[in-house]
Image (cartoon, rainbow, N blue to C red; front, side, top):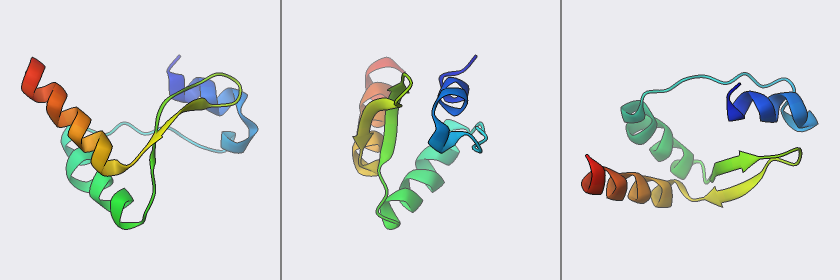
Length: 73
C-alpha cells in the first residue's frame, strides 16, 4: 500500500481524498509553479496517524529535485 493510501486510510482529514499519479515532468512543470502561484507548500515524507512530515515551498522542492537529477541522472 502506498504512503498516500496509508495517510488517507488513517488520517480523518484526508478520508475523502484520492491519490493520483503524476509524471515527474508534469509535477515539475505544472504543479509546482501552480502551487507556488497559489502560495501553497508541498507536504513531503508524510507518515503516521498524524501525517507528520515536512512542508516545503514548491521552489525548494524543485531545487532539490534538480540537484538530485544533476547528481544521479
